[in-house]
Amino acid sequence: MMRIDDGLQPDGLLPKIERLWDASAEKLDSIEKACPPGSTSPVFTVDGRYTARGWTEWTQGFQYGSALLQFDATGERRFLEVGRELTVQVMASHVSHIGVHDHGFNNVSTYGNLWRLTREGRVDDGDLNFYELALKITGAVQAARWRGTADGTGYIYSFNGPQSLFVDTIRSCRALAVSHQLGHVLMGERDERISLLDRLAQHATNTARWNVFYGEGRDAYDVRGRTAHESIFNVNDGSYRCPSTQQGYSPFSTWTRGLAWAMLGFPEQLEWLDTIEDAPEGLADTMLKAAMATCDFYLGHTPVDGIPYWDTGAPGLAHLGDHLDRPAGPYNAYEPVDSSAAAIGAQGLLRLGRYLTGRGRAEEGRRYWQAGLTVCDTLFGEPYLSTDARHQGLILHSVYHRPNGWDHVPQGQRVPNGESSMWGDYHARELALYVQRVARDEPYYTFFGDAAPGGAAPGDVASGGAPSASAASASAPSANAGPGSAA
Image 1: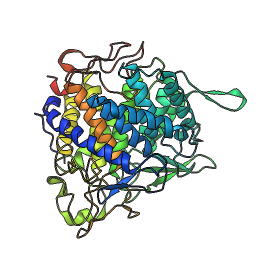
Image 2 (image 1 turned 45 degrees about the vertical axis):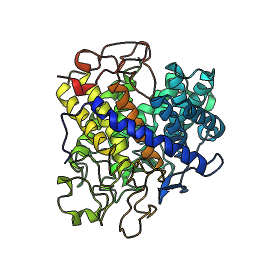
Image 3 (image 1 turned 60 degrees about the vertical axis):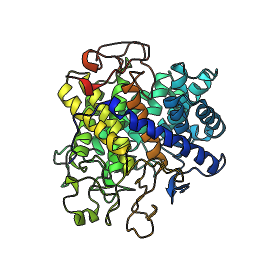
């Protein structure tokens, strides 16, 4: 299980984070030269060069969003110009894309970052209304991918079809959140005004119910915090049928990137719920239960250094002995690790820790917070951070689709390693920005920007760096040192 370093502080990670941004700048420049507008979206690296893999167009927003994060972290305006120009030039089709569940990935990472930076006063291009229009539409389009369930609720179905509820989509629901925050609704037949908040709430509740396990005897593999990548429903009557997976080893093991999406998606939505007046009753409790269960599972089923293997039930793990009692081995001969799951999950650990601390649960909050910092400490150094300018990837040892055999296996090796993914690199940058802002006492980073009037601002701080659960502010809040400094 993970060995949490209680001595880590955000400011102690700044040297590693600064090194990450230095490496990131070179890699972004290289990618833009190799993958110009009009070419297929880069997905993952092969021999250190980004290449495409057709399945769905879900990574282009990470490509251009990474440039915006680079600007956010370093102030280098050329990355702002690249990110803004290519968002305007390329991303419109993603806003109106009716065939995917990935709107929160593609469009909140691009238009959303520009909108957030504009509201923070970092961008002043007069295009705020343009960014807001894109965000309003993308949330409504994603919400229109709707399938009802037998109990009268429903879910946003995945690209796999209307029978399919993906655990991934909980993180992509930030598109609905921002769209609702901007006052938008989905218009249906006979001018029905469909609430995006209601759809978000139903989707989140069904994800927590069907894609997350709680050790309550649901089936023979019901371990608390385990996740199913996919839940399958009968499209004729909406009844739940079974767990499934597209990228994991089996429906009854845990694909760790899917786990990580839940670890981050639920705490992030909890922070957002604190800023709105009309949060549905009981939704926060449902999300918190799912967030804590999944984060606890990660802590208990990940090697000591915080980097997980790609699936907790992968058959080759049996050959590695007590693989959880030592650091992950990306160069082993049996099963790959997935650094992208660590990059995603670490941010979830940090946000959950801060959320709990703000509710007077400092001991629990500190545990998750320090666990998140522990993952950062590993991920932002060798052998995961790539400082080789010839390699376009930022974070090494990511995998995409192990069952399909899509990931590159280097010569002389038996399993994929040494490569990067666009989502892994983006989320590593987002994670680094999050920690950097906390360490420098800068505005707390959220996908929804500063706190809306009338809600509890998650970044407002009480004593010891703990966020106040009752504070209300319309300004960008200070982050202080976060729960890591709480007594």
